[in-house]
Length: 271
Image 1 (cartoon, one colour):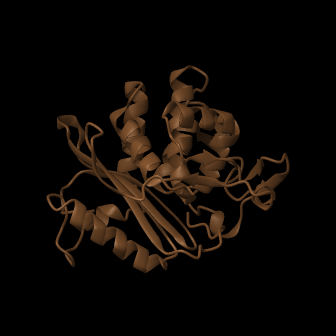
Image 2 (cartoon, helix red, strand yellow):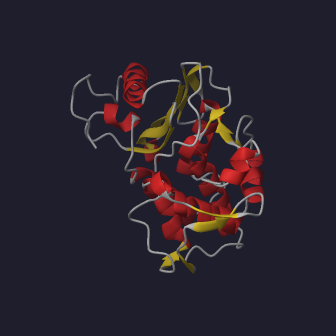
């Protein structure tokens, strides 16, 4: 979901990192700088959820009553509303499984699903996963839409370097069970809000997670086939740009960095 919860930054920037399938750095620009993460932090929540499931601390087949009201970092309850809401989310009280919440969090960027999973798995579990992955610019300090936490200066940040490493870990299933890896791949490939993928030729496999709030537009994608090692991982984060301009910048960069997979400018994407 598009969440205009952060003021647009003054600086206009674009930063990126491109990795080969084996993690080799191919190209990078300003990739270590922390940036407001928007919905890309949902990748780190997913990683923590899958890790908890594999450790037996979480049963992803378990059902819970859907909700739009959550307990924030400060202990105050808040209810998501307005642009935070996913109109396809189950009605409050309707049973929904944890694996469905995980998929909804990624494929349609559901904030209700994200906050519900964060309440269940906990911010500490996400922080532990961030540490395990060796990320240096990522922090997930609060639930989405938690106004009291925002007023206290708590935020969610990441960087292109951290995002591309996280996505590669999820797509390749590093340290995950086969079931967890397959769930991650399924959710990422079912992405409904792609940007990088809209610059690819028809038939090119991909999976991604985008994010947007006013002044920030990001995407991180896996491009190609992971089964034969013919894959690239690209993360792009922009700040200070209007939405359409940011998307055009991301697509233009994708065409430059990935000429073997990209469509020519103006060609209909293969989504």
